[in-house]
Image (cartoon, rainbow, N blue to C red; front, side, top):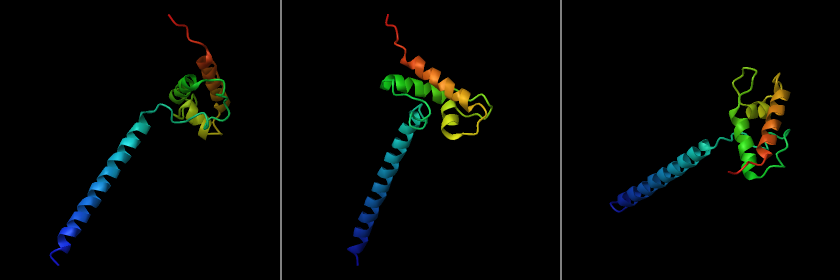
Length: 112
């Protein structure tokens, strides 16, 4: 019986170590996901065509849409409103505003 106690303690120690590692990995993954300024992607905003943009331009337009606010007073971003609220009274205006952001992102930037 004396040999079982150290084995149980070693098993428990390994289990605690793995649980801790899994928790840290999960926390790091969650933290990294929160650093993104793009909560709603081009797939969430299917009513707006992002196909003319390269990756950097698309990211720029999506960041703008995910930062700008809906004007109806709901507190949502443009992207959130368009992606989730089909009853918003200014949804069509929000779609148009995102389309403008896409056109602006598509413009070539002048290099100095």
